[in-house]
Image 1 (cartoon, helix red, strand yellow):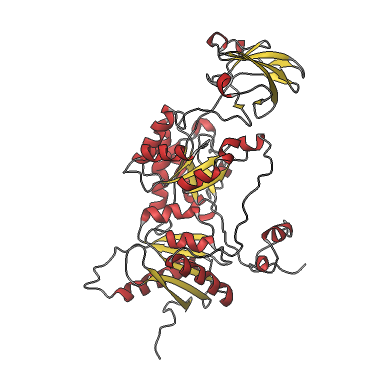
Image 2: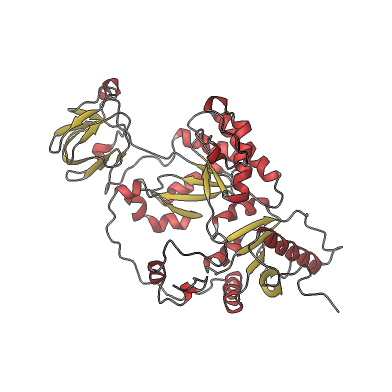
Length: 462
C-alpha cells in the first residue's frame, strides 16, 4: 500500500470515501495533531501512568498522594506530550481541591512560556434519577413484569418491584402511553401502559434486570421540561467566572434558550468564555438549529445520546461549494488554497480574537495552523479549533506612533516560525503561508504572504 499523504482526502470524490479508506496501520509522513486532547482532572488521577511525569520510582499509594504535589507534575508532563485542554469536572464536592487543580494548571502554563493551556468546566446539567431501594439492595425483575413508576416521596428510599421512585415530578405530565423509559443506561427498559394519576405511571418491563439505587433515567422521544441549570450548576458557573476558565461544556442542552440562560449567569465578566453545547438526547437533536444559533460549539455525547436510537433525519440540500461570508473568510479560504497549491509546511496567522484562525480551520488545510496572538484568552480557547497551534506572543503591543508597524509584524512572524520549528511541526526552508492585517486590532485581516521558514523570512540582502 502506498504511503499516505495529507492530500489523500483531496483525490477522493467525497469525505465518506476518504473515511472508508482509513486504516489503523496508516502512519502520517509528518507527525502533528489536528485535534486537541482533553484531559479530565479528578480525584482518581493519581497513578504514575496518569501523572505523565518522568520519575521512574514506584508511584505513591493513594494515602500518600496530595493534589498540590501531583497535579503540577501531571499537567507539566501532559503539556509537553499529550494534554492541550484539561477539564475540571462538575464541582460536586471538595471546592478547595478543584481550586488547587486550576491553580496548578495555571502554574504549569506559567513555567512553559508561550504555550497556552485552556481550562474547561463541565456542568452537571439536569438529570432524572431513581430513588433508593431498601438497604440499597438490587431487586431482580423479569421481562413482562408490571410495576408503578412513581414520584410519591414515600417511595424515595423504599423502591421495590412494585413501586419504583423517580425524582422528576412532571414525568406524568410530559409522557404518553406507549413511550419508553430507560433506566441505568438502558439496562432496564420499560414501556408506559397508562398514566394512573398525577404521581403514577403503570409500566411493563421489556428485559431482565435489577432495580437499583440512584440510577439515571432517560425518556427517549419525550420532551422534558427540567430547568437548564440547577442551583448547583449556577454556583459552578460562578466558580468558573471567578477563576477565569476558558470554556463551559454545558451538559444536556435541549434548546437555544438554555445557552442564553448560561450567558446570563456568566454575565459581563464571563462574556469571553466559550460555551460548548453537549447534545445528549433527542430533544437536543430536534432543536439543533436553534442551539447552533446561540452556542460557540457543539459536542455530541456518545453516552446518553447513544441510548436513544436516532432515526434518520432528512435535511435540506446544501451547496457543496462554500462561499465566504466576508473579507476575512475570503482571505482564510485563499490562504488554505495557497497552502495546498504550494504544499506549504504551515499557515501562520497573526490574530487578536482568534477568529481568523477559526476560519482557516473551517476550510481544513492539510498543514498545521500556527496562531500567534497577544490575547491570552484567545490563545487558550483556540485549542478548540482543528489543527490550530496557538502561541502567546510575549511582548506587549508597541506604540505605532513610535514603532514601525511592519517591523512588529515581521518580528511576530519570525517568532511564530521559530516556535513551530522548535515544536517540530515545520522544518526549516519549508514554505509558510502568512495571514495578517494591514493594521492592528480586530477585523483588519486582508493580506497573505508566502515566506520560507527561516529566521529572516527570506528578507536578507546580499
